[in-house]
Structures are given as structure tokens and as C-alpha cells.
Length: 416
Ligand SMILES: *[C@@H]1O[C@H](CO)[C@@H](O)[C@H](O)[C@H]1NC(C)=O
Ligand SMILES: *[C@@H]1O[C@H](CO)[C@@H](O)[C@H](O)[C@H]1NC(C)=O
Ligand SMILES: *[C@@H]1O[C@H](CO)[C@@H](O)[C@H](O)[C@H]1NC(C)=O
Ligand SMILES: *[C@@H]1O[C@H](CO)[C@@H](O)[C@H](O)[C@H]1NC(C)=O
Ligand SMILES: *[C@@H]1O[C@H](CO)[C@@H](O)[C@H](O)[C@H]1NC(C)=O
Ligand SMILES: *[C@@H]1O[C@H](CO)[C@@H](O)[C@H](O)[C@H]1NC(C)=O
Ligand SMILES: CC(=O)N[C@H]1CO[C@H](CO)[C@@H](O)[C@@H]1O
Image (spheres, rainbow, N blue to C red):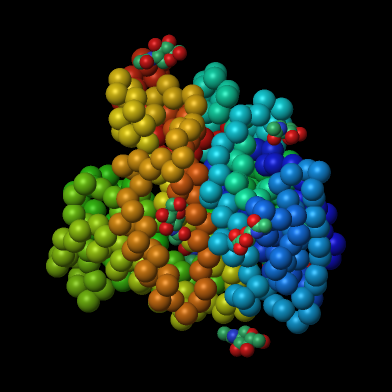
């Protein structure tokens, strides 16, 4: 397999999928190649020479000093953790958003038919457009340019499945939209449901999504019950749905916002099988821990790490408190049109305690789970939410409703 030097920056700013694609690019070279591993490394800041023996591809950020080296590592396999892309080497999450009006977005919610209506900002009437034109520039490395064909080739004969909540669903839709443009109509198909499947037929590849907002079961997930006070979470129930997560090559999980209601989580164990009595009220971190451990046990007992790569997307921040970024007169993310420039900004919508819970659970797992850490890079993007360009109860907001900042959706990411 040959690899072209990564060049340029990401042409589209998809907060949610950006890091995943970086990881796909970084890892899939070894994932999908039997004989060699290509692993992007940052250039040491004070040198132009790659220093690591493991270094396969080194691209310096400065154009005139591009250093490249490719060293196939014989007999190394993609699962060998010693060789897998190491976020410590180039922390993609450490960087800044840079405005670039020359970016040509790969799709818009008008060109791609797969974006759900609540996140179709342009269709829903958003007229400002700066939010399309911010590029993520990591400090220590250059991101590879996204190429839909290369991405599809990497997925050839494979199944990629996203499992989780609506943010994960958006991530799936965005990923599909980034590649579907190059596939002729008759060579692709989409089936929607609890388990949605996009097929790229020529590539024998599928990009799938499974709705499981808490990973484990709850009585609210299909919206038959809408009152959060009546929500009951079956913290040990995962088996029925998880049967549909097997035989997949790449699994990407997430779960966060559904655990974050203001009231305690009513947790139920299977042994209280009859009806919904016998629940226990728990703090969200404790309940989250129980739910995630159920998930972790399933992964450890079911997933063959030689066949399946497992990822976990960290929480996507909510931007519902404008005082977090010093806009005292603002309401939520309403009317925000620029990212936050302050390095390491961290708002009240990202609960560090919850992050620690996931980290701890994952650390104890047998199967290596790689984090797609979107939290920090998304924290900056107060401008990148559906805001009032969304719908409620299946209906677009009226002009009047749009004028009311309180109606802004500051949880979901935009999809342009
Ligand atoms: C380059 O950086 C390394 C590690 O950060 C340090 O040990 C070394 O002294 C530096 N060399 C120069 C010439 O600054
Ligand atoms: C802006 O984007 C264009 C098109 O992708 C690219 O050629 C150019 O290098 C970018 N500019 C900067 C400063 O990154
Ligand atoms: C298509 O991919 C699946 C795995 O997703 C594999 O089992 C099957 O053999 C492939 N079919 C062809 C014709 O390559
Ligand atoms: C994965 O493959 C390696 C090397 O072929 C083998 O040693 C290991 O037992 C396998 N692991 C599992 C879980 O099958
Ligand atoms: C939102 O922005 C628009 C356009 O800049 C402005 O006309 C309007 O007054 C703003 N609304 C609020 C509530 O700040
Ligand atoms: C994700 O990034 C945040 C901030 O950069 C950091 O605090 C956290 O430990 C990271 N979590 C994981 C699981 O990588
Ligand atoms: C959407 C869904 O849950 N699909 C299937 C999951 O797996 C079970 C058992 O294999 C099927 O009965 C479901 O239809």
C-alpha cells in the first residue's frame, strides 16, 4: 500500500467527525494493511529530523521543511498497541480553529439527503455562514486532507458501526455525507430505523448507526415516555441490542447527555424483572459507571480485538450558559457566530467527573478502546450548534419561535 503525503488541512469542519477521520486515517493504514504500519508523528519542535525508529511518516508543519520517511514494519499487526497511533505523539486535540474562507465544504445539508431535519441548519433558514469556514489546526502536526475515495477504499469489505445517541447519529450522518457524494445513485442505499445502514455497494462497505442513547436500555429511549421524572434505566441490560453490534470491523460508541438530567437517575437491575418497581435513585456518575461497566463487560466478553477495533467518543459539550464564555447578555449559544479563542476554554456543559468515569471504566477493560476525544475542540465551537434552526416535535420553529433565544438547541452540532 502506498501512502501519499498528507497535504493541506481538513476541507470541512465537522467537529464531531473530524477526530474520527484523523484516527481512521492514522490507524487504518495499519488496520487495513497486513504488512506495514504507517503512523503519523509530529516533528520534534527543535529538529527537522524524525527521531523515532517507529516513525513511518513524518510531516513537518512547515512546508519548506517537509520530511518524510516510510518504514514498513514487518509482521506488525494493527492490533499491536505498541505501534498504534498514540495521541501522546501528536495530540490532535491540542490546537486552534483558524478561519479560512477558501475552504470548499464537501457537502451541505442541501446537497446531502441524509442529514436529519433538526440539524439541517441551512435548510432551516440559517443565513450566516462563517461557521462553515473554520479549520482545525493542531499545534504539533498537520492533518491529512480528507479524500472520500481513500476513506471508502479503507472501508472496502468492512462494516463501520456507530452506536449511541443523537450526537453519535449526527456523526454518522456527517460521515456518510462526506463520502456519499462520489458514489453514483444506483451504487448506494440507505435504510433507516433503530439500526440504520448506509451501503456503498461497489465497495461492499457499510456505514451504520444503532440508536442506543445510554448504551444500556431505558424506558425513555423510544420517546414513549417523555417525562424525565419517569425515566428508568436498566443499568445491566444490554444483551438484546448488543447482538446487533457483532460481526462489525469498527465500532464507535458514545453516551453522555442522556445521563445528565438534573434529577437522580432511577436505576433498575434485571433481578427486579417484574415491572418497573424496585429501582434505586443514584447520582448520575454512579449510574453512568454502572451502565458503562455493563457495556465494558459486553465488549470484553464478546469482541475479538483481532477482528474489531473499538472506539469511544468523549462527550460533546453543551453550550447552554453564555456566561461560561463571558457573554453575560447572551442566552445559550443563540446568535453566536465565532468560536471561543481562549485556549483550553472549558465550560460548565462538559462534566469532568463524567469523563473520569469513562476513563476509569475503559482503563480496566481487556479490549483496547481508543478514545476519540472531541470534547476540547468542540468546547470552542459555540457558533456550531443547530441553535434556533431546528425543529421541535417534528415541526420547524416558526419565525416567532426563532426569535426567542430560549428555543435554541445548543447541544447538537451543526451540519452544514
Ligand atoms: C530538543 O528537544 C529535546 C527534547 O525536548 C531536548 O532534549 C534537546 O536538548 C533539544 N535540542 C535542542 C538543540 O534544543
Ligand atoms: C485555506 O484553505 C485552502 C483550501 O483548502 C488551502 O489551500 C489553504 O492553504 C488554507 N489556508 C491556510 C492558511 O491554511
Ligand atoms: C462483503 O463484506 C462482508 C463483510 O462486511 C464479507 O463478509 C463479504 O464476504 C464481502 N463480500 C464480497 C463479495 O466481497
Ligand atoms: C490475536 O492474535 C494474536 C496473534 O495472532 C494471538 O496471539 C492472540 O491470541 C489473538 N487474540 C485473540 C483474542 O484471539
Ligand atoms: C441576533 O443577531 C441579529 C443579527 O446580528 C440581531 O439583529 C439581533 O438583534 C440579535 N438578537 C439578540 C437577541 O441578540
Ligand atoms: C479528553 O480531553 C480532555 C481535555 O483535553 C482531557 O481532560 C481528558 O482527560 C481527555 N480524555 C480522554 C479519555 O482522552
Ligand atoms: C434493530 C434491532 O434490534 N434488530 C435486531 C437485533 O437483533 C435481534 C436478535 O438477533 C433481532 O431480533 C432484532 O431484530
